[in-house]
Image: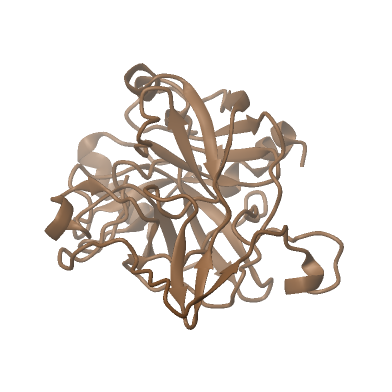
Length: 317
């Protein structure tokens, strides 16, 4: 699934001038003392800066550092995004179950690696101009999967795609930096009170249509905001398709051009909790209408809050 954006504008790699520009590279692992306080560990969901998301735009170089790219055997060179995920600890990534089993494995091969610390798929490391500095990321980190766990009640052959959630245990722990962090999990069974979410990914988009054509994977991490969509109304909309929504699913979007689509499956639906000062994981991209960004047709997301106990058991959290 994709982050849809206005069907205008053109794409070019972020402009970099090496003249009279001081290079500022944040390569050392961050500590809470440097950026957040005096606690001994980096807390989950902590933003590197306080700026929040604006809809339909290229993400900042250090936005959403828990984003993961799933790399499959037959889509490695170059990397073609098939699914995303969210880092929830140093050793576990949560994603959609349909990213870990079924047709995607038959088409793209087995999951070969999980990439974290990514921004621009075409460059490594990534650099942008920020004021009088050239801001550069560390090199991306690719980690092989150790174990893959799909929710036991997930069935790829059902249209409603209930329990579309899975976990990837990494072969080795990643090191937290300014560009690699983990997102907070919600409380188990917490009621949905958030009215606006944020999504991020490298899925198919029309944002770069002038240069790269319509409906192509984005090389750069994109972000947008989506409104919460009433669960009962969402069920009614999808009733003609014989989809039955359960508490383990939530709906968001339904506005023109802003949506998730092919390539964003498994990516996080999230919100910023002002009281906690942290980003909270609400959902995972699961499925949606054939034509992304259709007015009145929201996307369907796995409701992570219904699976927190299962996640914590598998991930030893």
